[in-house]
Length: 290
Image 1 (cartoon, one colour):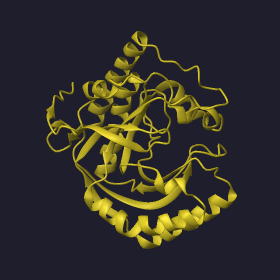
Image 2 (tube, one colour):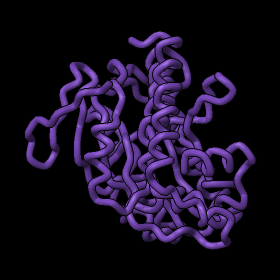
Image 3 (tube, rainbow, N blue to C red):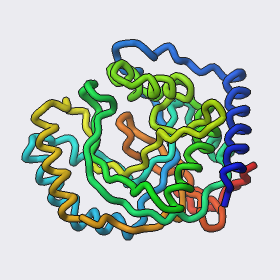
């Protein structure tokens, strides 16, 4: 397991690689500050796919009443949105279809198996006042070694992978960017996405808020929806008051839709032994982190 000093050293090295890559490859930030969202072409990400012990609970106890509540609210598209259930590490936009392979090559050493508790359903807007997108999420308990390791890995993975972007994440532009905090705007300008950890003034930040998203929506997040979805969150928290204890044993490179929903998986890397394989073919692939 990495010590904080080793993690920071790896992060600084990663930031150096970031600057070198950016010098050689144009990153276009011209969409930042425009009123409309940047056109979405292809987003890729690094995520932890939810293990079966978690999806079994969500599928049996949460999704049935959740879908019923959504339909009663007139939210028809939301239950139909495809998503491979996951917790995100980092997302990046690049129209180049070879990006997943480049991500695998750039990926730093993976963390150890993460022992975590998923707990507390809540709603969140991409940025307050933007109207959309918004999400219905299940949080990760922010304590324990598993959470600490998850946060540290977010820092090094962000440094290693975001240089592969071609510009900001489209959902972080337009009205979302206009309503962001100054800190989130700085992250969007510097690494193309908000809500990630970076090294600033020699210290690791803690902007990352790991969670699993159950509902992705582009419906306007007005007062009616906010009030109704608050009641939904309260109901789901009564169903699972103690959350779900689990272990994340692998991490995956995936393709992602505009709202952050995972569309397909390319590669999976074991947190137990560092082996990697192509999910489609089932064949092993080279993973040799520096």
